[in-house]
Length: 213
Image (cartoon, rainbow, N blue to C red):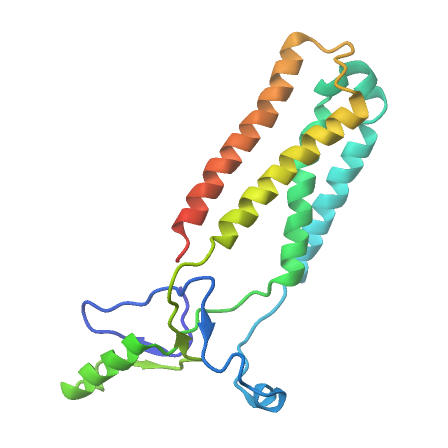
């Protein structure tokens, strides 16, 4: 993990990722002129990732478009072209995320009450040359109380929307007619739909649970 500045901490101390809902002092109080003169954090948008996500989206949509004729007439709601619906949905989300969320070349350390206390301890022991934290940006504002788990809510909504869109598209294009598909083909198609939802749910819960609060 690359960290901006110079950091050397004594035993028992470590860095911690701030919560997603963290705010910083002067975020709201700074005027436009002050914001223009403030230190700018390096960030960038990945054109390559955006292009890949766009390509995946177009490919998935074209595959789904080509499914509407012969595959549906032959396999009904078990048409294998429907398996790309989750990937089309996630490719669109990836594209939106890459367009909206910049990338940062490193982690940035922010000021906090704990860091101020550590500096006082280091100074009282005369160990400024051994332990130090330099290159901080901003000052962390302490969070009191409990807030709604918005990332978890957004993930649950996105997964529910994906399932709804998947089932809605299949039903709208096929009226849930089996046509000439075999029993095993229908079982595999439904298993793929259900397995993707279950695995996505557990992985999402695991990822949301691991993020800092």
